[in-house]
Length: 150
Image 1 (tube, helix red, strand yellow):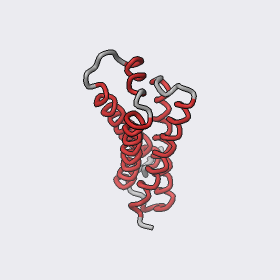
Image 2 (spheres, helix red, strand yellow):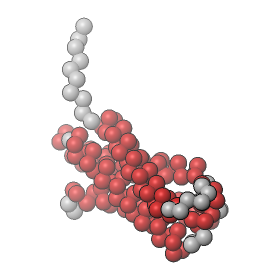
Image 3 (cartoon, rainbow, N blue to C red):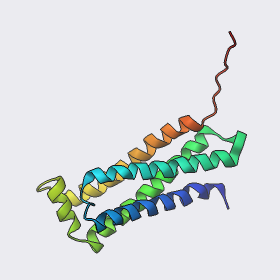
């Protein structure tokens, strides 16, 4: 297995968990409540964290900040794109009334509401991926600081 497939695999799993979480929320009719979508950040963060952690364990002393950042961000982007695609299919094909329900909760009378929702889902996922990857890399990076003995 090539090393470059690692973030794609973790991204696929993260997307699957995001989809499962959304579908579970829809079973309880909670999928229109935006506060439940905050947990998407936790799910995405866990996927990114695990990717970077696995890479660090695999690479050991050869672990590189740039490579870890790239892998973490790729994991988040893959998960976000797949979840956004699922979200578009769900809201247009599987449950066509979903966007009407969502617009009743979120906003009234937007002519481009559908495009705004899809764009928002994608941007929120990308921003979450970037911020969490930067945060987690601080945990995993090697310190070059030299401690002076006083």
